[in-house]
Length: 250
Image 1: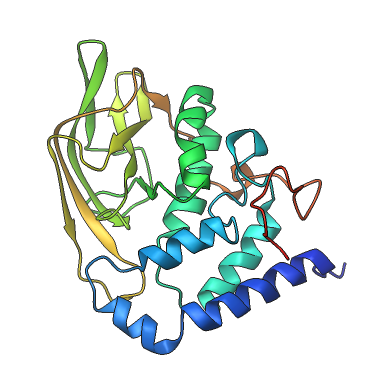
Image 2: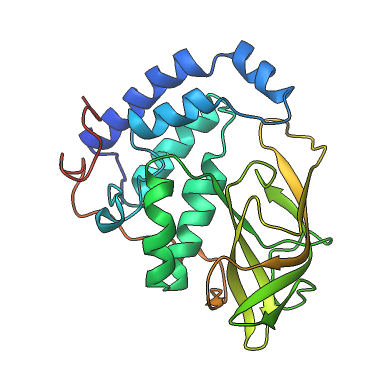
């Protein structure tokens, strides 16, 4: 079997390559590596408003383009090629797929539109001190408080956790590992950037001390974070004008 990209997928790669040649030259990469924030807000906004990339695989009903994993792979390849310093993987890959896989329609309606339009940076917080992406030995706990939950514990190696507006935290609840939405400015949340070998991809430690969940009920975490749960091939690409950003892919 021989796999080739479609003309539309090749066009997507070419458009993004030209954009990144201007926005992510080596001098800009080195500059952003030395900053604590780790990305350029203007470039991040343009990725959404000009290219619609944060909403690439978000379904159209939530304001995205409804593309599939191949288009996402094309985008990630070009960003890796340019060493783009931006919270794209944390937001558009980890957080988006966690929300979609959770099966929580209310959470998807609440959070995905703001991710799609680039106004919300999001991330997924699973690892703890051992760095394992596993849910069988979680130390972070969720306990009932009134009609909601509060979280206690520590998450480590959280991609772009120091700048995220929305943190999807996997914690142990009464019913098992569950996914909770934590706002970046929540009371009881402390965030500390980590020193890492790869300075193009920032990581952080999250300390949670009675941090309130941003929703009224826990969301069941997917039992595994497998690629099979991460999306379905798009039936149409490029997206219709009504679904995408005006001017995208032109």
